[in-house]
Length: 457
Image (tube, rainbow, N blue to C red):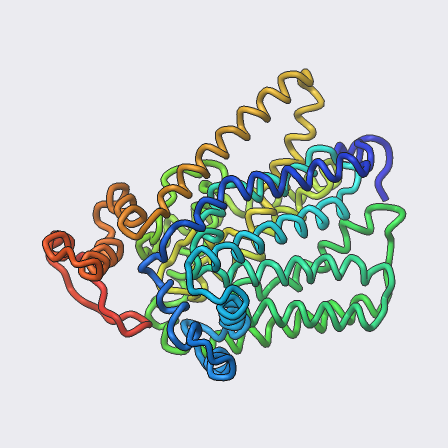
């Protein structure tokens, strides 16, 4: 139980209906303004044509459904394929804009679900009500929302957020129907994209946060059994994913370099959340050595113990940090989720944990500074975030614009140059294609899709 006023997170007042509506508007409106103009952009010649292939957009529902249930690109994700098929039937067009409309709607839905989750766990915090707003407009989210191919990440996050919200409701009722819905949401998330398979391991931490609110205590043997069952299911799904990826793990080397790479990835992603500059796609593959891995691991351990030590004074800081660590773990480099080691899209839902930690610490700091300065700083920060996101959305105007920026910021990015080469051939510009093809000495390796990419020696 929390006592006194030591915890700044519980020092506010519950949301009024008017403030609630205002926050919903502030979550929806910026997303529509920032991402809405992307509906005019063409498809990107990087996976988009793989997902929106004739088997999906053919118009034959049963043929497309059979393809969705049997196809596997990187991993088994029938829910994602079915969502593309439904788009094709609902909109009766294969225009890229229609698929992006669904992406934007999913992102807005995820933002609302994140808002409901945050306000239920921290019902009296004023500042944390704004965390989902930042979640909606952060530049890191551009890749997930604007890229048609990343529908899978949006769907996985959507069902996981439903999973967590349903869990909070189930803690109060304990009804079997609630537990069944939780299991269903988790399964749908796994069948959308196996990036959030460890979500059930956050349930005990989430329950501990809720139980610290005196009016929402709920302990029972049934609760522990249900959590254990869901965590066991998560382990089985992880094992199944690793088996399906047999052969891919070997391409990433032995376990020790992957552990070092995972630790470094956490710090790199953390830097991208706090300083979202020069976000590109794709990042080059990399593998960190032992020394940087030990250094990064040390920093992570220090942050973790610091959050543990502050858990009573700043309620929720440990929950936010563990949210980041647990949900990002499958994409940190330990197991393969795609062709690249780093990707902004992997941060889509884990970023919420980092924003919670920052919000909790800022709430404590803001009580010691004049209110006017708080509003000025918050407004300036919001404008900077919106301006950066607006610029990054503009880069997705077409394939040449997107990967041209990547090459400008990372001149040795061979994968980006190969994408530009293939795009130049597709649009009938052989001279430009030759310019991208003749890049230093190269060797060729076969990708998971069977295409050939260029890699700098």
